[in-house]
Image (cartoon, rainbow, N blue to C red; front, side, top):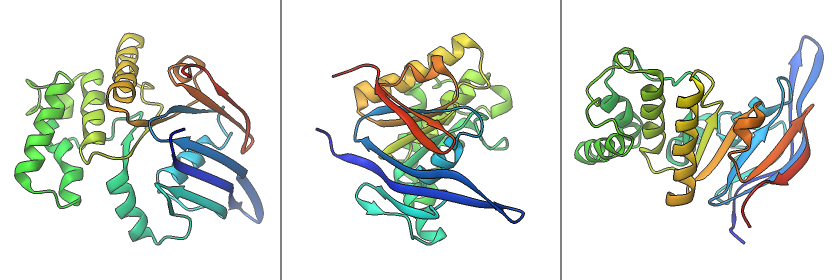
Length: 232
């Protein structure tokens, strides 16, 4: 059995809306194992975005504990959370979140700058990633000179730049046509099977979730079903 890289133990997240508390997550228990491809699926309002923020070290729980690579991140300061997510989490967003004034190459090198990686290593790694994703002839293009699919491939390359432990993909095909979306999911599957990356896919989409090995279904802030859909 592969060791868990992420553990949520009795995690609650409560927000105040006016005077009324809103429980976005209610006592969630979840283990994600190293090298696993898991989808967290649920409708709007189910708590999946809150779960993504907690797993991605963008927020801390109201109650309970979250372990990332064995470290309890539940009570860390914002600056410590920022350091951990910069090193250990690679994000892929629905809207790509590329910086429009930077080239593809510069977008991919950006997270490495924040981690203090030497400039020559930054360029070497970024060029290799862009070539790996078929963008060797597009690395000096800015986002508005790229198609949606090309922009998402730049975003995937950027997510891998610091060699993170976990790739967190939030509706990664939401702004793409079906063929390009299929290609993006194929890239994620290959990252999982060939490079053994841990992939956490957050989605409302049944078809997208079926690309994963396992699906945890969220409803009203609780996991109502957790099933294996492929693999041993």
